[in-house]
Image (cartoon, rainbow, N blue to C red; front, side):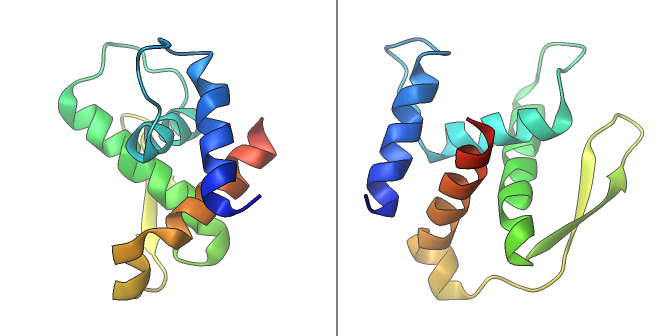
Length: 110
């Protein structure tokens, strides 16, 4: 199986936990990863909170590759990450590294 096929299989598996009518795409996978790192929110999430959780998810899945490092949590409990090294433009544009990182992250979780 290639990375795209593995990512598709993970998305199908996570669809069981969401509405079958809602596609699980890369932003949704980043959101779920962010929720796992953050934990269960105490209140309903605003649009800004959801965006922050997707960013946390991206940092978390790229941390093993040496791009980010968790430095702690803020007053609201959100994990804080610092950039250790920049993502190359070609990696950011085609998203292959992010896909690979998501596959590795969810393979370890599921």
